[in-house]
Length: 543
Image 1: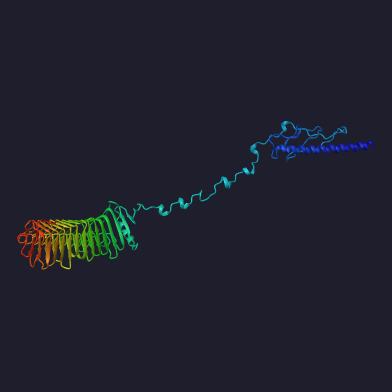
Image 2: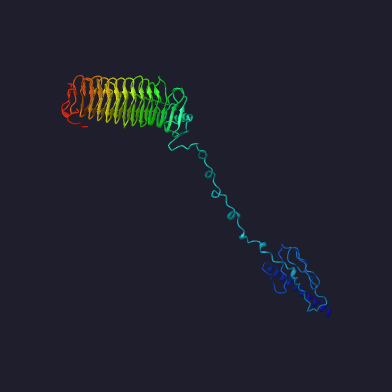
C-alpha cells in the first residue's frame, strides 16, 4: 500500500518535473527568438543560447546534458532539447527535470552583419519613379525638332539674296535661260532673277534671234553690275518681250549684241512693257533701234547708251507707236549710218525726256543728230551738245503737224547741221521756254532754229553766238505763214551769211517784242529783216 502510494507520489513528482522542463524549454525558446532580433545576446544569466537565423548553417551538436542525453538542433532552426530522464534513484521531492545547460561560447552564432539584414520595404527604390527616367518627349529629343526639315537641310548652293526668286551663278548662261523659262511658266506674278555681282554672261549662240527665251510674263532681272554680251559670229539680240510680257532690267551692261542689218532691236525688242534702270548699252547694232526697239511702253531711268549703231533709224532707241519716259540718261556717240535719229527715233508715239538727260556727239546720216520726232515729244532739263546731222536738225528734227515739240529749261550747245537748223528743225508745232542756244551752226538757214510750215513760240530764252553759215537767220529762221513769236528773250553775237543775224522771217510778220538785242538801243537792220517787229525792246537781258 505504501509502495503504491510512493509510486503514485513519484509519478506525480515526475509529471510535475516533466511539465516544468517543457515550460523552461518553451521560455528558453521565446527568449532565444527575441534575442535573435536584438544587437546582443538576451535572456537571463544561465539562460539558453540564442538561436541563429534560419539561413545559417546547422549548429554543431551541443555537449551532453547532465543526464547524458544530447540536445539536437533540427535543420530548420532552434535547437529542441530531447526529453530527459528523471534522475533514477533521486529523492522524490528533490527530483526535478534537468535544465538544458548553456552551450560553450565557441558555439554561439555571431550576429549577422548589418549588410545581410533585409532592408525595409520602404527603403527599396522604385525603379520607374525615382531611378529610371521615363522616356517622355521631355527627355527624348523629338525628331522634328532635332532633325532638319529636308528643304532646310539641303540649301541651294548660293543662298538667294533677299527679293530674288532665282540666283544665277557667274557666267552661267544655261541657268539664266532656264530661269527665264521657269519664270514664264509662273503666270502673272512677277519673278525676280538675280545675276552674280560684277560677272560676265557671254552668249555664243541663241535660240532663233534671241539669246534668252521670249519674255511673256512679268520678269525683273537684277544685274548687280553684271555684263551681258554676245560672243562669236552669230547674230542675235538678248531679249524679246511679247505683247503680254513685262521686263525690268536693273544695274547691268548689255554690249555687242546685233540682230543684223535686216531686223530691229539690236539688244532688246519689246512689244510689251520694258523698264530700264541704270542699264548701260554699248556697241549694239540693228537695222533700226541699235539698242532698243519698243512698240509698247518704255521707261528708262539712269544708265547710258554709248556707240550703238543702225543702218536706218534710231541709233540707240526706236519708239514705234507707243509711249516712253526717259529720265537722267546719257546718250553719247550713237549713230545712224543710213537715215535719221542718231540717238532716238520717235514714230507716232508720245515721249517725255527729262531729269538731266544728255545727248552728246550723236550723229545721223540725214536728219536729227540726236532725236527724230514724228510724234509728241516733251523735253525738260535736257542738254544737247556736239550732235551732228548731215541733213537738217543738228540735234532735233521734228516733223509735220500734228507732231509737236515742247522744250523747257534745256540747253543746246555746239550742235551742227549741214542743212537747216543747227540745233532744231521744226515743221510741226514748236514751243520753247527758259532754254539756252549757244554756238550752234547750220550749213544753210537758221543757226539755232529753222521753222518751216509749222508754228513757233519762244519765251524767256537766250540765243548767243549761233551762226547760219550758208544763208539767213543766225539764230532763228521762220519760213511759215503762221503768227509766230519770240518774246522776253536775249539775242547776242549771232551771225548769218546773208540776212537776219538774229531773226529772219521769209513771209508775213513775226512778233519779236520785248527782247534784248545785245545793245541798249534795240535791234539793228542787220539783226532782223523788215518782217520782224522788234519794238518795244529791252535794254538788258531779262534772263
